[in-house]
Image (cartoon, rainbow, N blue to C red; front, side):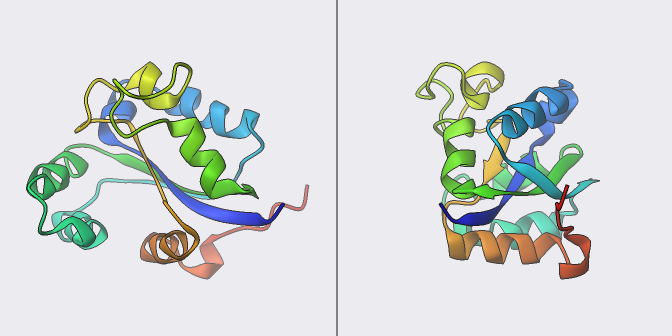
Length: 143
């Protein structure tokens, strides 16, 4: 397997409900390691820039408003097949369609407030990680 890095965001709904520890535990139990993390209150321009790929979609404004509504925990996760593993742990975007035992099935209420974000591919992960983290902010987990 290939060691990869992926971006993970614990969104305002999950942060406000104190699900941070539960979510991180799921990543770690599946072999993903946190190599960078920071809690931030996104500014409008940051949320707009990060989600610019969705700018023409009808949900864009609501997504930006939601993402600036409270603090988020932004992380870089590392591990074998980290991108797919993270996406499996998160579950389907719509919590009603998410498999039992996934983060979204267990903690999310709606497709709009679905607890977590994860990169969907290798190139997306690189771009998303670089959006929030400088290279020197990402650690090496040697122990």
